[in-house]
Length: 250
Image 1 (spheres, rainbow, N blue to C red):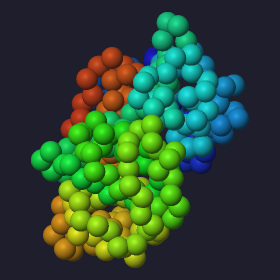
Image 2 (spheres, one colour; image 1 turned 60 degrees about the vertical axis):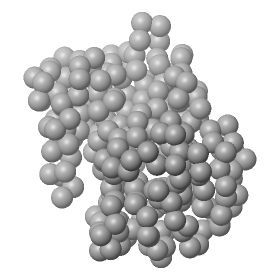
Image 3 (cartoon, rainbow, N blue to C red; image 1 turned 120 degrees about the vertical axis):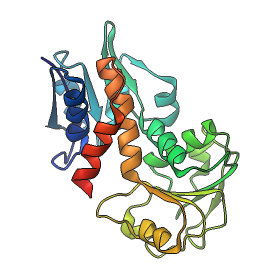
Image 4 (cartoon, rainbow, N blue to C red; image 1 turned 90 degrees about the vertical axis):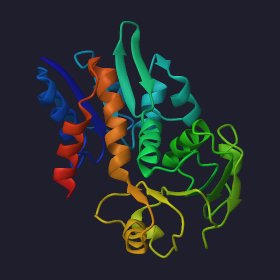
């Protein structure tokens, strides 16, 4: 039996096993997928070549990047890895969070967006900015308590605004914890990386106003599709994986 796992702390509530095992079941693969409690310091000792790959969550994403024998260009640019793939030459670090963002933006259905507002400037924001750049968005405003655009300059040329009234844009992407964003007013199509507890305040507001919106479970699903394919070599059975996720959440 081949196997994969997710590493992080706390890991108890991870939905990755649900997604990946639904994919194995749909394709009839003899694979297993485990949760492993792991801090950044513990990661090098826990990695085993008995596993085809690892999903990596906080606080291990930077440690995974440093541990790997090779790193994909997107993971290097974003500065963190949520995926470790066993190869003949060791371990490859990748970042599929950015592919999750691309999938969420695609489902939001905005035709060729050129402007975006990103709320927050942490690790998830870097994956978001990479995805916006790849989507051809050139007018990007980062709203955060402090100006961190210099740290993001290698990814995008962004403007900074303090958190407050959100300017109009083709899309607003919130990387803030749900409660931290609840006081903000939404008037543009929204992608909120939060999804639990459901509904996040910004998603609830957008739905009430009839504004197009997608939540973080869509990103979670799309990044898992990419991981599934990297680990197994098979095309991800997306409908079955998505159905398993949504039945658990909703």
